[in-house]
Amino acid sequence: MPKKISKKKVSAAKQKAESKKTEFPVQSRNRLLRNFTEDALRSYFKNLNGHKPADIYKLVMGEVEPPLLHSVMEYTDGNQSLASEILGINRATLRKKLKQYRLNN
Image 1: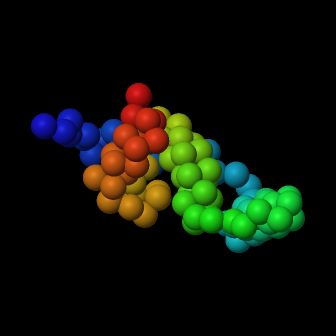
Image 2: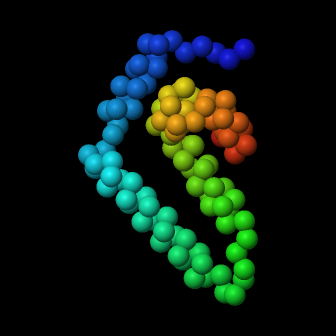
């Protein structure tokens, strides 16, 4: 049976998460991530040396999802309820992805 998290703990974790926010506006942070992703993909395509790309979605998700999940779990001090809320996914989906990438320690 899953361990219940008290509302107090979730509230404390949310307050801690709020205090960790950077001073950059959200749109600026989003643009930085988008630009970095576009640059990385341009570089990837440029360096294919004639090889045909395949399963690019799987490749990108396999490279992006593990550090995303790790960073959010670190940010929330392992609080899966808060992490799933931040990620905008169901907690069961988060658990499945953590297990998939072996990040459930």
